[in-house]
Image (cartoon, rainbow, N blue to C red; front, side):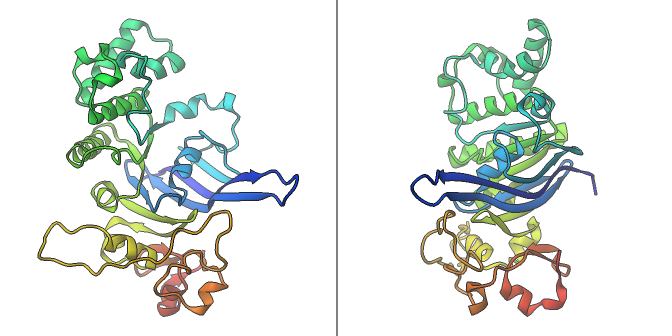
Length: 332
């Protein structure tokens, strides 16, 4: 196995939502002690409902925001406690592709200037050298050289996302954090961008942290998957194992909602009751028990540990699974 490019250890992020002057201080625990690693050249995907902490995780790893606790290691260097003035090298190594290609590009800048911005900040290349790199990168992502003189509003959504990808790749980073990069695009365009990302990964030896709520997209691009619920990873493992033998009830419910392209085939849909609980005041015990169709009494009071199932080669946080296959589990 390749050395991990990204290692996350006990990562937490809390946001204070009241100052305590006239009432008790309250905190929103957006990310609550997650850990995972991503090997070089691989794709680790984080999936879950809106509000589960996926995007916050991506921003913590990119150091757009600072963790409350925990460690983030990029290529063997711990970055979570670095000051803003010390992050220049990190910015070169880690780049983001954002969800909305309409909002992530400056409408007042030409495409050439958008892609060149990282070069202006991090290098001392001449304009001629910059333009050469920009032309090369635009060709790699499927854009024409003449389009460098156009503005973002003159492009379609898919083309704008290609511009965002070109901007992210211009510094030749080791890790790309892709935060819902295709959710704002039409289905046909989604497949084009996903195929482009896979081609670029192979050609440039990129490592991806891919964030999405769409399991059909995740299945297409991932090597391994972490399922996130209320700031915690409740199950993680290889793509094949997660899709063929999901263990956590939440994972099963998510997979049951994925459409099947064959109209003759039917899938038993698992309908979750209620809404996602508030991360400000989460349920006691297992955070999923208020919506879980398989909840037991222990789930209401005792929080399950995230443990390793050596038989199925995955991490899972569920009392039911640990109770029924106890000999296969290793506490970590």
